[in-house]
Length: 357
Image (cartoon, rainbow, N blue to C red):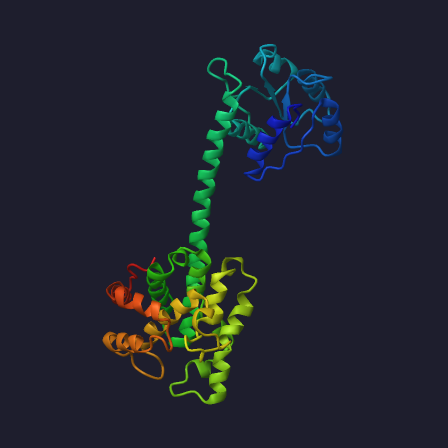
């Protein structure tokens, strides 16, 4: 990109780099020539009006050289001195009037760099200089909309991958792949009533799904044991919280609240939980929320060592543990939102989660 206007080069560089096009800049033709000789580019964007050798003359010299003849050149001009006829005369591959849309220039450059004939953009009448910022603002908004759409697709792919992983892990534990989705739904519902920011925190959501990730390191004979665990087996089982945090510590998606869920979801309000024996509000709120959600699903689901208990009995058990196992504020939210939680449970039984997202 050869132009003595620093602000225009910065504008174009931002546009091109937003779509992963590398840009090398030069202020005049002599600087550009040294750069081109050192590393021939895929395309050259060249302003006509520059100090020293002007862009039109520089383009003619590039096209006259065997070494640079095939490099496509786009001529830019903001004056009436250069025309399409001038561009054709000096061998330019495309010609654009300033001000122009950066995205239109990007499209021309990409077509030329791909070996296709570039169709020059032609302004409908002469544009005013202050239109350049308006055109750039429009294009930037368009780029952001494209980026948001790509991000949504990527987030959806992440979510599907994490959900599949969580389901595969829990099938090793419970024999089904439904627990993580149900308990995620319960936790989001409880968070909406107690910690709304957490309900919309991507890290926390992934933590809800991967809370038992550490069980990948627990032997199947312990996970699937149909009877009570021995003391040694129980201690080994309890290591899954720390193990899960250690394995997921380097995952960007889990940084923050997500790791807090993984490590601390078996802590108790009264300090008798594990792995750290934290109590009360010293336990991260997302872990306190998840503790209720996890216990609710554990009680209302079949396990290798016992059958599921009725929903009403599980609800009474949670209310009874307020201030002991569970945070009273979370239990209060459970009571207030029990109808929604029950619908999540019922929809899961039918194979579709409703209200969980």
